[in-house]
Length: 609
Image (cartoon, rainbow, N blue to C red):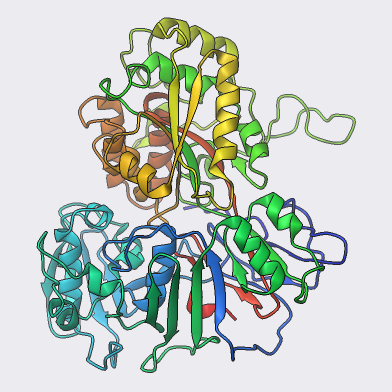
C-alpha cells in the first residue's frame, strides 16, 4: 500500500524585519530542523535544544469549540486536544507518523479478516485517584460511548466487547473493521474510571448525567488532571502525580479561549506561549518588536478538508436539492483561486485529504513531461497533481443527467479481477472551473436569481483561515455563474447546532479526521453521519451505496483503489463539494522548543518541550 510522505515542515524564526513563513515551500530561515515524518502531519518540529523554563505555567491561546470535557461527548478540536491530555486510549497514533496506529495502554492483535481485535492492558496502570485500570473500566467506557447518541457512538458502531480477564478483552465486529484500531485512538474513547463516573451519574444509555462532573473533574489516567475550569474562557491543567510515562516539561498548563486577534497580541506581548489559530496574514505580523524574544511559526500540511454541503431536503431549499443546481455550484468554483484565498492551502481533488490512504493525489500517475516552457517548467499536457485544473469535470465518473437522475459511472471506474473497484486515475485531478457548463446546468435547474443563504461559523476559523474569507470567495465566484449567494454567518454554537441537526441548506465547513483512516470519510456517504446532515438517505443512489460498501469491505492493498473509486463517484453525485486542504500553523514563544502536532488532537500537550 503506497503512502505519500508529507511535505517538509517549514519552521521560520522571526528576524528583525519580517517573518519568513508565508509560503510552505520556502526554506527555513533559522537553524530549526524538522523531525523527519510520514503521513498527514509531522509529529513534531524542533529547534536547537535549550533548557526549558517551566517554573511558570505554559499558556496556550485557542478558539474553543467544545462545550464539555466529557471525553465521550466531545468531538471538537479544542475538546480533543484537552481530553487527550487527561485520558489514555487503548491505541494511539505514532508521534512521528500519525497514519500509523501503535499500542496505547494496551497491546493488540487484529485478526486477518479484520473482525476480531484482542487487547491486553499494560501492567501497573492506575487512574489519577490511584485505583487500577481494568477490563471493567474499558467495557464501561466503550459501552457508554455506544449508548450515548453522537459521533462517538456513530463511529464505533455495533462493536461487541467480551471480557477474558482483568487485563484482557476482545472486540468483535460483524464485518471487516480494519479501521477499529485507529478509531480507538480518538480521545472520545479515553478510558474512564468507571467507579468514579458511576458515582457522579454515569451509566449506559441516555440516562447518563456525568457530563457536568467530567467537565470539572478528571476521571482518567493521562499525564494531566483538571485543576480548574472558568466557564468557557479558561481551562487549567496540572501534572498527574501518578503518571508513569514521560514527565511533561510543563507541570501546569493554561489554555485560554482567545480569538485569533487576541492570540496574536498576547503572543507579541508574552501573554501566551502558543497560539493555535493565527491566519497566514497574522502569522506574518509576528515580529521581533515584541517584548519577548523572537517567536517561531511552524507550518505543516493538515489533514483538514474544507467543503460545501448542499442539503437534499426540498423543504429547506428547492435549489440546493436540485442536482442541476449542485452541478452548477460544483462546476462554477475555481479551487485554485480558493486555495490562493487561503494561503498555504492546496486544491482538494476529493473528500479524502492527501496523505491518507485512498487520496486521489497519492494514486495519480506521475506525468511524463512532453514540453517545457521558457522558464524550464512543465508545459501543456503535463499538469502536476497540485496545480492541474484543465479538465472540465472530475475524472472517472460522468455528470448527472439533466433530468436529475444519477448518471452511471464511466468505464474509468472498472472492476478488477478480485471484484474490487479499480479506478483509472488520470490527470488533472482537481476538477477545473467551467463557467459555461455551470451556466448551462443552472439554466436546466430553472433557478432565477433567488438568494441562497450560505451558513458558516463566523467565529470558528478553519486551521487559522477566517471562514468569512472563504465564504466571500465562494460568493464572488458563484456570482459570475449567476448564483446569488447571501452570506449567513452565525456564532459557532448556533451554526454547528443547525448543521448537525440538518437545518442548514447551504453551508461551509471544515472536517478534520476523527481517525486517520479512509473509512472515516464514509461519514459523507448516504445515510451516514454527515450524509444524513445533508438529507441524503441511503437507497437514493445505488451506485454510491455499492461503492461505499465496496470501500468499507476492502482489504489490504485493495483499499486505496476502492476509496479512490468511491471519491470519483462522490465528486459527481454527492451533495458535497470538496474545496481545499489547508495548512496548520503553530506560533510559539521562546519557551517552546518542540511542537508535537497531530491530525486528530491538534497538539499533544504533554509532549510540548
